[in-house]
Image (cartoon, rainbow, N blue to C red; front, side, top):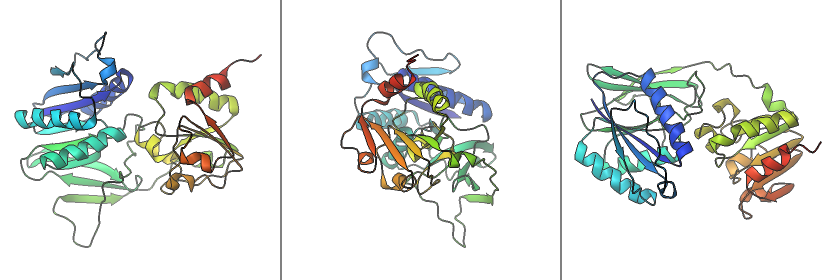
Amino acid sequence: MKIIAVILGIPLEMEEQLQTLRSFAEKNPLKDADTTLFAFPTPAQTHGNQWPINEKWQKILYQTEAPHNDDALLDCLSKKIGDSLPDLVIFPGSLRCQQLAVRLSLRLQIPVHTNIHTLIQGDHGLMFKRDVYLGKMEETVQSMGKAPIIISTISGGASESLTIGNEPPWEWAWYVSSEPEYLLSAEYRMTTADSSWSTAKRMIILGGGIAPGDMDAIRALAQKLQAEIAGTRSAVENGRVPLERMVGISGRSIAPQCCLILAASGMTAFVKGIEASRTIIAVNTDSCAPIFKVADYGIVSDYRHFLEAMLEDRG
């Protein structure tokens, strides 16, 4: 089986994506898998030190001249994949990678499956398992035909129970009386996630712009403020917080005494989940971000600077 794996971004993001793919490969070993890794570092990161590639991958294609935008990256991938005719193209589960996987499938006119947590190699091709409807249902999908298939795995910050799998906004799953041919099974599951966090008096809500390397500082601030941590849909899809801590129309509604929002733009679906908060404090670099329209206090700043100031020991 010929596989292409794709990672992209700044070195820290690429390291996280590689770990996600490595973990996915270990949990889903495929017979006779021949894997090539396509690494697309952010252009600014290609000068000077090269990003280190893990030696466990069998073959490496390192793009020293990285595409400068997503369209150019898709042009490059379309040509490489068209030339190599792989069986499977694997993207990590970040929001950007999911979007690229869907766009690439439209360009190449081949199937795409997102939020996959399990692969099964059977006599009749590959089968994929993923969680849908906020983890309340698991579906098993059979690959159709012999064309290449593009998949996007679960995001790197997902819990070990692999219950993260909410549908991205560009993809819909329709369940009708006559099941589609590719759907092999669908089963409901009971969720037992702890919801006591949602009644906390203080809450820190993370947006999609939070970098993975800043989570330790955020946890330290939460401990200092005796606050709970939750997130927007983008933060969940990027793996910063678990699915059960998503706030908004598709998650939970909260009403803390103080709600601190970091790097969230303030989309309506999210704001509906926090509007009952007594005091809302928003930190965002964009002074025109919609979140400032609902915030009681707005701070136009990089959230990292805000974290440093809040964590500074003032004796």
